[in-house]
Length: 98
Image 1 (cartoon, rainbow, N blue to C red):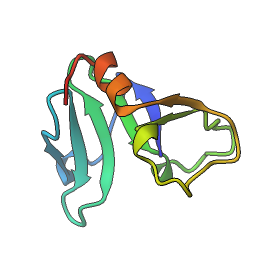
Image 2: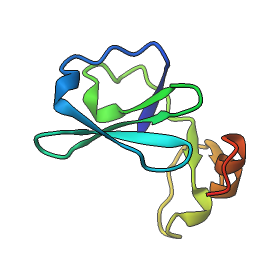
Image 3: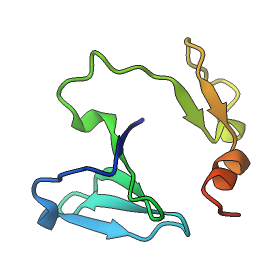
């Protein structure tokens, strides 16, 4: 799960991050020491999606959307209603045919 943090993101310790070009529309950041996935960044806009587990304050967050809903296992279901987007819808939104 990640948080849409927009484009104005300051990352302390950036020298400890390795960025991998993961798709035509996004790149992913990992801890250089342990390999932990930290974020993905949209290439076109520079928007950061940062993993929720990296934040200390999470009680005010609202889980309101899911992507790749067409690829989830049938037994996997969240209790609350969310916006749902298939992989094809997500790729169409970012102009990719992944």
